[in-house]
Length: 134
Length: 312
Image (cartoon, rainbow over all chains, first blue to last red; front, side, top):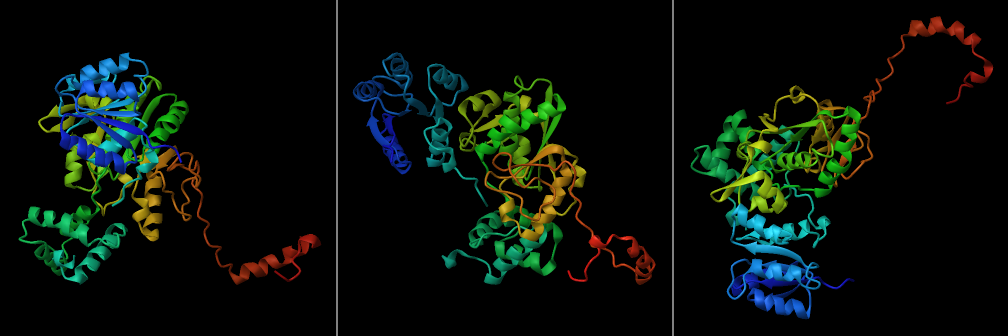
């Protein structure tokens, strides 16, 4: 059996982190948490996760700044980064993708959306999603 | 849980039979929940005070129009973009390149039969648009057909909720092909204009829909009774052109009674139309006794080694 994939949840809302942690555990990930971009950078320096679920608007260091620092650092291209934010503006979404985000979730989200997006970027096996029936 | 049910138990069975009779679809064992949720909404829309009142009316007066609405509501599917992803991969990697080679470009027509709220046909349109550079000079026309329903109206409008656009649709496709409108996202005209939607009453003949190189009928066949399956496969075969394909769900296949499609999938859920329809053998006509009498002398010319020895 392969080791569970790790996912760092970066969000200043404790409630969002708790919800995401629960969903990620159900999807067999090993989650960890950071409350802002700066804290997330420190955690990535110690151990680079397989995936990062990233909020945009946070104190100290926001998600976009974090992403730019991450992608420029050693081993920083490895994690799959999925933005998870209330920003819905197409220009903002394009900005995040240009900065190196792999996928983008618009809040509010649920476990179906998170599972679908993680499948999209290859973090989950697509066979997990069977053809829906009636 | 039975406290949540509002109809007499016999009505649930009657609705199940009605669905089989009209469209050949078997509702699941626990279809009471489906009946309650889908039909309560329909009852309100149809102006009835309650679900029981609508069902009483349905069975006491036997109105065809109401029966169609009821069955349509029961069959409405929740779908997501690029559902059964391996089927779309096959369409892009195998089916469309094969058709491109065969027709040397030309026009390829794709039908989503039972398109519901449209995610399947819009996904196919996105795929076709992405392949435009790789498959030059190929014009892809798409058609979505379903029973008249609220889902079909939403498909025609090309309007999807915040949640729907995040199920199966990559974010890059969302920002390229959709525009945000309040809480919803609406398909851009450039994509919408490639698709024609049509109402198709569930009791009418489908042969007037024309022919297509790809007919998508995904996620339905496993729910259909074997009797109706043969009938539906025959009808669908009439819509698929020679060298065309039938796309079922990734884990579905036409059953053994199928004469129209190669039984071996060329990709998950993809079946090629047989080039020539296999003739169903007609039963041998009963030979008239006098012909046997006339033929009898000819048997003298049959070499002895071919003569029957009287045993079979």
